[in-house]
Length: 264
Ligand code: C5P
Image (cartoon, rainbow, N blue to C red; front, side, top):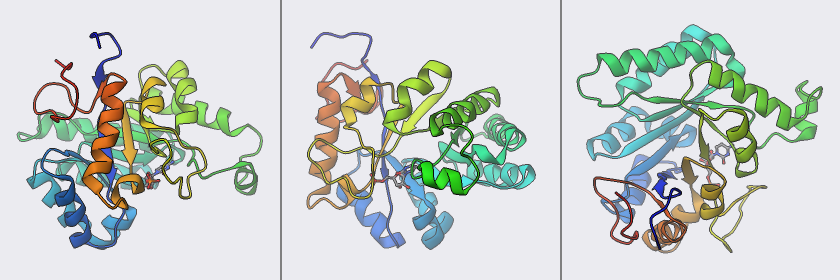
């Protein structure tokens, strides 16, 4: 395959949606040293707190802390500062917390990045627009029925962009519209399933290579890897599918041997 413009890095964050510190360590160990990207969400953080994030960082892993902060601006700012002090790479804030909360979150991440001697990069703030679990009926119940869900997602993404956020969390189905409306925003996409894999409770899923082609900058994969009989094989299959489509988990530095040798 010739080198072309679509070849680009596409980190695949593995969602550590487990109940204990030990289970999380077991998943990370099963995936091996070269699996570098992990998501810690509400379930694991409620169980294991900062210690599992510290363990991941000590092993050199890149961490996406997905706690979807949604509170008054001052509390969001202070929570973001704490996340930044943990050395995580990405952190979610709910856009429904409003412009000021987003701006202060971005400010706290920037301030910490500038102040830190150990971090070479500041933490990216990802805004959650509307949860992909929100459908028309739920939107109506919570008073969001005046505009379509797509319109809400678009205007919240524009708000996130105006606030200086690094990116948004969105479903694969929303990707192209968000990229059109907000070209500066990175898009992190969950709901990823290799062709033929169990969809679990995700209504709208996409394959890794489709999400990549539609413009994803980061993928989140949970159960397709963590509940597989051979987790490492499932993870490598995803990297292989992406590499065949011209996307690489990492460019420069350590790359996975199973990825094709096109990335510079
Ligand atoms: O197991 P699965 O691949 O479906 O995991 C998806 C992960 O992405 C979960 O951790 C879930 O919290 C997260 N997520 C999602 N949909 C969103 C936002 C986050 O599935 N809209």
